[in-house]
Image (cartoon, rainbow, N blue to C red; front, side, top):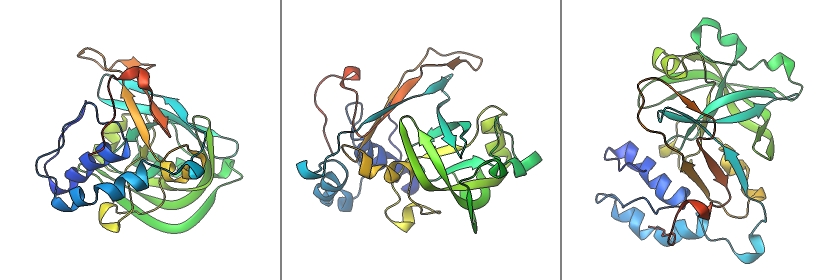
Length: 251
């Protein structure tokens, strides 16, 4: 399932999914994509999809997701030394990785909170930043930590240690979920408000290809929130051919 967005900002989100995920079997390109994007097709294919044989890595990684009533999809992520666990929203429309700090107190509404004093690998960069979404925003300190996603571990990953969530974000988390994993590109400042390497970009040197794909295991419509433990999976560095038929096209 893929939505075709029409506002200027959300058109980028659609473009990310077509190219960055590299799985386009369920999509049709928006008719109002700019000529500039079409002309840069070969550049995008070379940079994000086709790697030379000498630069290819062997590794791909599969990360299970939780489906919360078709409302959101979440991944378990480990942060710190020793690791602290967070069930975070997976988002292909933004680039920043953030988790709520234990210092957030009543300004946040999450399932778990990050305790920097309990981690030997935490570094506060002493840079305050905020990020605003289509609805809602968060504010916190840029920091670095050891982060584990699936079978991959990243040292010195930059992230936002959040000290404030507005009401919209608090309602989205509703005391169960903790943070957000942004997977969108941040190559150009106009596309991101906090331009730091994403978790996915930090894995480039470990992956077979600079691609990721997502299989969403949906459920029938329900009136109450229902968590499905196996709600699909995120494949880092490739795709799972068991979930589609045909060939992959890059637009």
